[in-house]
Image 1: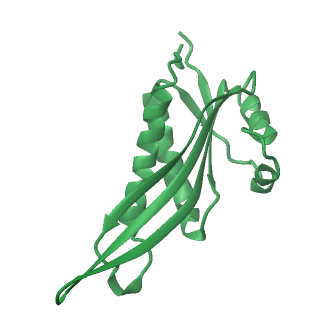
Image 2: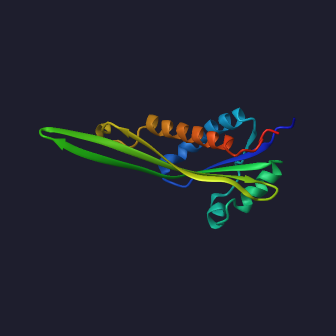
Length: 167
């Protein structure tokens, strides 16, 4: 039984803080795609400007790169937004601060031969934590946890395609 090849591309469509996290999300997804019985191949040389200019479900530059790898599918993931909001509440003399961190990740699974979109979704992943110490930005452990959750949810949804992707 020949395993299907999947071209994997992770993009940073959000803030610069997510730039270093592209490699982490790529690795997390890579491991989970392998666990689903697919053979992932990383697309590394796709110009982001070409992706932003083309508005189709799966830009032709991705399809071309996936075809060159001999892939059957393309999994394109984009970290689209990172937002932190501080909520204050007061009960008598007690003041409470909570930090809500939301990461939005969009993904698409496209069949290479037909160019047909098989699955696409935007995930809004949220964590609520205690106040940020010394006014620093989103803690790496919080962001890493959100990225792991995104990889898990995408992998679970791949299984929901009702396709024998490994056949």
